[in-house]
Length: 338
Image 1 (cartoon, one colour):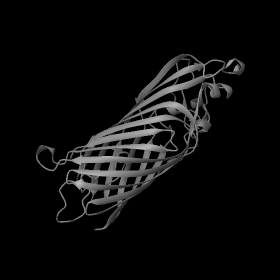
Image 2 (spheres, helix red, strand yellow):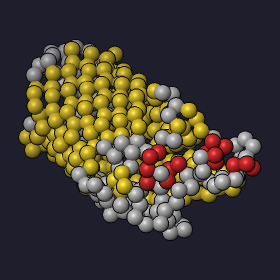
Image 3 (cartoon, one colour):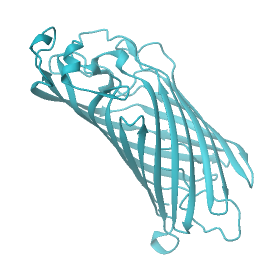
Image 4 (tube, one colour):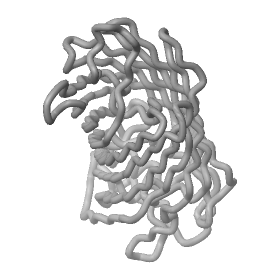
């Protein structure tokens, strides 16, 4: 069982500079000046420029899947589980602070605050009582939640090329384990791996980003990774490596609006190691092998930006996406001000 069904909502407000390729008829602010929502570290800033941003993201999960097949209480009970997760919500609040030391180097700092809650229901006949099961029987349930500071990302964006035809930059980030990995349930046992507030390990976050434009059409691509630098955290485990690739294109319908499309692929390993203290094996979220996997999704979006007056440079973007195979759905939006 690799995943719940997921819905994603993200928003951000920040001070940012638009992407501009030199043309006489190019507006001062481009609606496609940033990559679609969900692509991070997609641009540098001019020397001496600061950017202060705020990002809020919500992920909502429902249903349980094994690959592309939905799994019900009866199947989980037959597999030995006594609890079925019925929903999970994760809210992330992140500050995005950037400063351009030079035209070729922009530094970034991104602290986070996380809240998560999950609802569970007991499976009738679980833990060896499969003979009593007839259909998807569920009994009483409960909810549990965690909240606190998440991991903190620091890093730099380095310009590799800047021509009239394209731009290329690399990002080298480091995720500091400021988020807790010893969150526990009311019974004193560790909560699910996926509900810890951070990874608990120092993680390397490299990426490389390409962008280009021709008149009203723009496009880009990014390769990224999350690479744990430690074999285990203080609680005895480590999340698997994650690799991602995304490509997008946008078309400017008018000076103030553009439409975009994006394709994204991600692959993540399962959890390595094991909790070094009391923990449960009552639900799929309690087992390391139920984490990780491969994901392919596409998204469509729209960006808006003001061109004059008090709204000059104020931008708003929205995008939605769907997953292949169709086991999850996701949407995201974010706003920018500059």
